[in-house]
Image 1 (cartoon, one colour):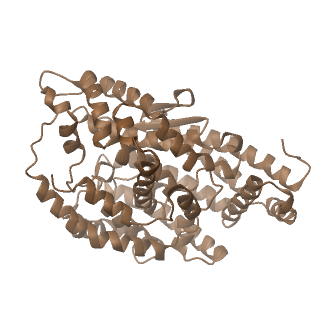
Image 2 (cartoon, rainbow, N blue to C red; image 1 turned 90 degrees about the vertical axis):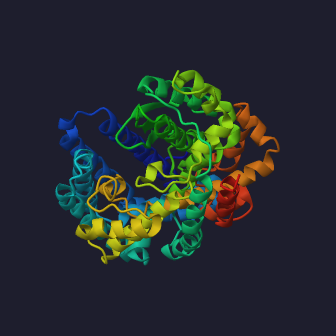
Image 3 (cartoon, rainbow, N blue to C red; image 1 turned 180 degrees about the horizontal axis):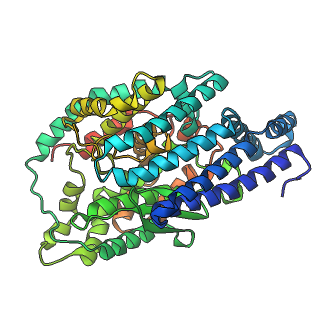
Length: 504
């Protein structure tokens, strides 16, 4: 236990209390997305706004800043982990002190109203009633961006981006995304053409939700999800939430297509395993948190895209799918690894980001990144989002979303929360995942064979040693260098796509 009379010890005690408050807020948010009756939304929004304001006020207080300065003056007396923790405490204090508690509360209330309305209005394709609610959230997000920009000296969008990806800049994202924009559109078109001749056997019939869930639970257990510290539920939008000691993941089911829920579960399980693998002795401290959302997304895409859509994994999981979901309408050959690999690696541009294939997915992210950056900078207004969205969808994916708001600009939950600056982390994560999986293959000679046998302990141990157990000890670039030998390099993702979708 730290000396609670020292400045550093008092800081650890404070952030332990903040962790407990965050725990309660996370559970309240999970409940609002899964179990809460509609009539509870206003009161829940008020409660969550109150706790967000309280956390911001405590973390960003003058007293906390003074304690950080006092602890920094005797930094040499701290251990390496304590010094790293102090750096993360300073980052959290700066983020909290850059905006007023009043703005945090107003933003939380507007976000709650917008999200709860979105759950109904999206299904109705009702942009007209959604627009003013989103406009309020965006206006408050712009205020936050301006305050954070003034405090940090960063451009407004970068000030938001750094909440999710510390040290990242839009200039760097523009450079990286430019490489993908130069490669992906032609690659997607070429792959679509090449796959037209594939002989596919698709699962037929209806797949009851209870059977889909049973398969999901079986595979979650196989890949190492700890059910003593987590659970699976249903929500409008799949997510991973909670805290490392109690991770909550959700999915949504379609009885005519079990792949949507299954791959969603495996994706969220990657997030959950990262949370469950964070350094236990530091869980209540900032240094014990996940490094960034780009690293977090790398772990979910490592699980879903790199592992679970691989031929090796489908050799293992195919028989389990057949046992749980097989029926008289689907021939046995459907469940063979070659067929499943062709099914689960189709390149087919579509409207919905969360259902997108691995090659076209980054184009969905780039679209959102460009629009949200324009929203923050003021060159795009909320009322103009549908038209701008449709134009970019046609340019990047060859699809029109004109008057189709539910499958266009209303499909995601992120902007309802004012989470602008978040979307780039999805594709940063995809690139990190490809780079890390290459490193895992180099470290584990028989990795494909282990996966095909349903043996994931060695791979989980590698991920723990490379990523999970470090929490936020290293910077993003240093974490990637330690794990893979270099900072993020887009060439590994491009090479992965070329290998996975090469002509067969």
